[in-house]
Image 1 (spheres, rainbow, N blue to C red):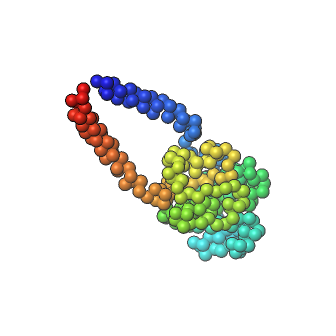
Image 2 (cartoon, rainbow, N blue to C red):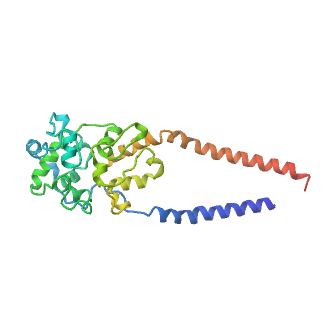
Image 3 (cartoon, helix red, strand yellow):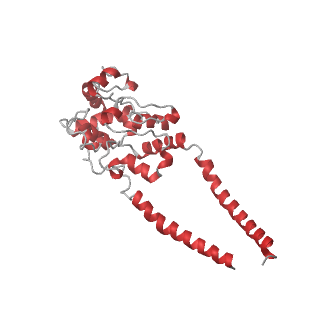
Length: 280
């Protein structure tokens, strides 16, 4: 009888700690934030659906190819990477996949004023390496977005999306990926390797942080990337493939371990009663 009472006390105390103390500690270390917003409702709406692809291409050639390449279209930047790095401090990204990975209205606002769209005005006050194109009309910006969407690939692998979205800043040593392009230096902040980030943060944290880093870490140098929900899911899946490839196998063992401990607990209790029966 004493053993049973002791078991009840242990279960009660454990329950109080788990359902009382632990949630409070979790709420302090991981405060709740607003859910990810894949419409980027804080940005000015620009109707990209009415963009003119032909005019968009002309605008891209006239204004964007001075810095950016579009390898998919055979459009090369006039700068070699090392020259761009010397001139701008960063290597401008290739735009072949921009229409696939970025949400259309975010992309339009990034063209209009990238520091505002990426929530980096606290770091770049008129000195962002990409100039603002707010002198363009909304229709012209919509035309550029329409062109970028028209040339975007129909699909991309998880790794390809990660590289184009995150690979200019973040290393992934587990997959032998090393960031290049000078952004780590330009941002002036320590940029973490993401090989094991999937294990150190939960899914809610990862998605809200990628969607809007300022929600989780106000003042961070990391830009709001502006990914579509599907592209962001691919980024997280890639991180999972690299840093937690045994997740499914590990989770499948969970209920088996619980069942094993219950069975062994019953056996241990019956064995204890048998051994100590005569002593009592």
